[in-house]
Amino acid sequence: MFDRAPHRVYWELTRACGLACRHCRAAAVATRHPDELTPEESLRLIAQLAAFGDPPPHLILTGGDPLLRPDLFDLIAAARSRGLGVSVAPSATPLLTAEAIQHLTDAGVSAISLSLDGARAATHDAVRQLPGTFERTLAAAHAARAAGLSFQINTLVAEETLDELPAIYLLASRLGAARWSLFFLVEVGRGALLQQISPRACEELMTWLAGLPRQAPPVVTTTEAPFYRRIVKGGHGAGIRDGNGILFISHTGEVHPSGFLPLVAGNVRHDDVVRVYRDSEPFRQLRQPAAFGGRCGRCEYHWQCGGSRARAYAASGDPLAEDPLCVYEPIGVPR
Picture 1 (cartoon, rainbow, N blue to C red):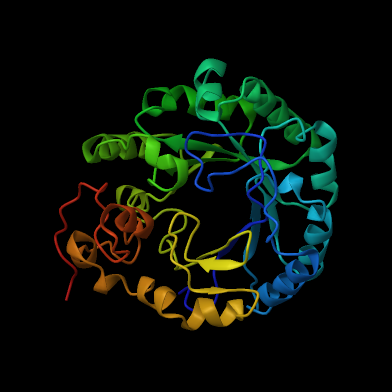
Picture 2 (cartoon, one colour):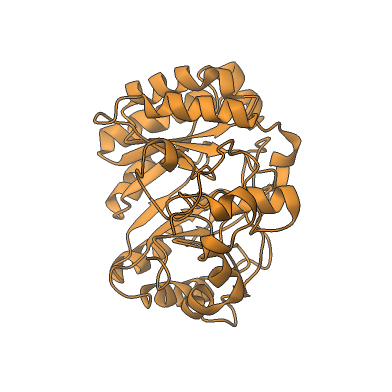
């Protein structure tokens, strides 16, 4: 279903960021890397992404902090002119003002994402390692709502955040978030310093999530936990996982199956990103769930789910291995 084009393209514009979050996948730093894609290279990349055809993938500009790229709004304009939908994942720094949010709205951005890893300033700011980020995030949510800009709340799922998830859900609801996206810890970057929840706790959390109201926002989605689709019998994004519907481009142009799976399949500086996604061996393998190892390969939900390929790689060094966070014992794939 996603062999010809990704559903979403995540582009890490920069690894520069004013925060030092304890779980940062990118291990972001304060200053921009000298080998970031140049403005000219970036515009060529946008033209390549448009060549995936109709419907075009949705482009998520992330980082680091994309607001630190001086050409951010030029890139948004170029993507929109080629028919790409654009979302932005800014960091909760002093750059994220009401004026910046209005500018994003006026530029045609369809949504932004804001992170809440605690329901209180003390817990959230401890994860972000910068006082004031909790209040700044709330202010950004209010500003987005006032501007009519859709926003989602991203929340890390780890042992350090597990107890506050119900309160974070209520806060996201009160803020008016369209989505609540739970990012299940993968031990890459600085995330290796945090503690994964147990498979049993994960299953209990999934069951609780499935019991939340389905009609009213925020819509609940998961990242690196596709087995949520087993609990809800399909659900949003069925079949999408690392390398299958997902494409990640690093700040230096490296092409990965996702931001959490550090396998390099090419580089947009010298490779056609469309060809890399469609034909490179890492992407082709990740689109064959029947060949996955262990329980993931023989699971009757292997198409809808397939497990987190990034977590399998982090745990075993093999991106095709079973996902150790899933507790489910499969009945078996129907023959």
